[in-house]
Image: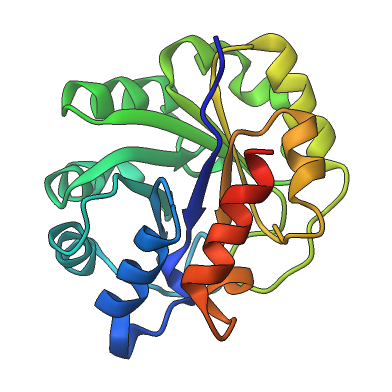
Length: 217
């Protein structure tokens, strides 16, 4: 099975005063997902936005929403984000004591469950749920802020998961740039979250297209 190569721009780094324009730019640039970083100021040291903004973004794009919950007590919020239009709902393995339960609940709600682990979290912590998720997200920086540099050993984690599950979507998030995206792809990632490297450039549409072209060569 040949997996699609997907660029998932993170709107956390977009210009919120002109968010519709920013989303349109990456749509035209060939993005495959819109990535939503949901932060609560507890699980990570930052606050972003909630289901209301997510629902507004859903109304303003035809692209699937890839919603990453970097929050405590995700059980209380997954239904809200599914109702807001999220296709993929990603839960941090470190944020819940009932990972199997919440992932199955996401599927019951009609969305695609996904699981994420932080850079230092071992792959063994998610080994037993790989058969019930549609995607694994490997954090390649410590979550909470944009603009960080990719931690090199996280590509090895991608490589190990690809060996375990050849047909699984594997997403990598953090520090992805035009200079290192080929390395992440070679490790086995096929979904690439890109934030500041797209939205902080003068022409996000052109830059997004450059990322799309790079991973499809």
